[in-house]
Length: 376
Image 1: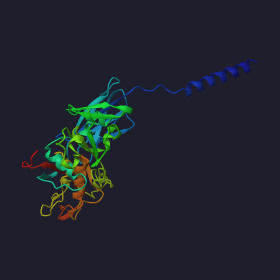
Image 2 (image 1 turned 90 degrees about the horizontal axis):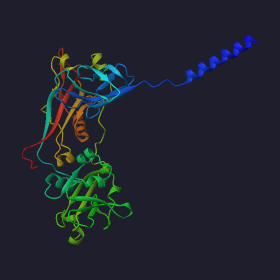
Image 3 (image 1 turned 180 degrees about the vertical axis):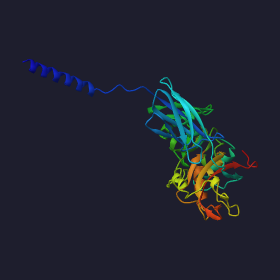
């Protein structure tokens, strides 16, 4: 009998232990590390790898150089940053549960970059469906303009919210929940045009257009200030005119930001490709051959300067090797695309080592600026 009772007791203890072990362990308190990665001059660095000694995951810096690593145990840690072409970097970070730890990382370039290529634009010839919009945006002789860059920066939830911030424009909710606008001193609705096509002469629900789908907006307050082709007559245009231009294949980059399809670090490790400090004569742009690099029309019209820092391999024939182009930093995708297209036919003087041409990894800046003669 005692033996039977002892067996029951043992079973009860084992069952209790099983239940306890099945309960999930309390989650360990954790925090986060966030910050920015730039080069020594403060330009954001894209694609830098960030890792923490005690965290399982890793992060990569985005186009703005920002990053965030979550799930980091509380306490003191070492944050490491690395990117091809830059010296590795590490810094101590104290993580608490109160707020995320903030870190600003500046990476040092290992070798000197090639001299920058500068595009000084003085004039632009616009073509296509948005030619008129770009011409008026560049001149800004009348009307109020909202560019794609402004829309993306504000990132409004609705078009009514965006227009409500424009001086002299008020946003309101009309019948059936329609969102419309009124221009300064007027109680009637303005005429609305979409990509050059007039909407019905009635209140238009502007919130039916997603701000993220709009390339640009023109607002004209008076009956005669709008471009001539967008004036019905003075009576219909007396309440103002709104011209909305949509985004499309002709406003966006052909491709997303390029990334190398080959392992450049492995090529460098096996001396299949050399760094600038490993060659006797560095690769350089062949200035006797025209580089077909053009200023993107939408950004020229909006008076947006730009910068792209590209990284690629110049092969032994002086060409940019396929699959090696990567972007270290860029201020706009359209600038990136312009550089990508130009490098497809670019000509370089190859690097020399031990008397023969060799493949070299290079970094080069491409700047887009305006001549002083251009009227703002």
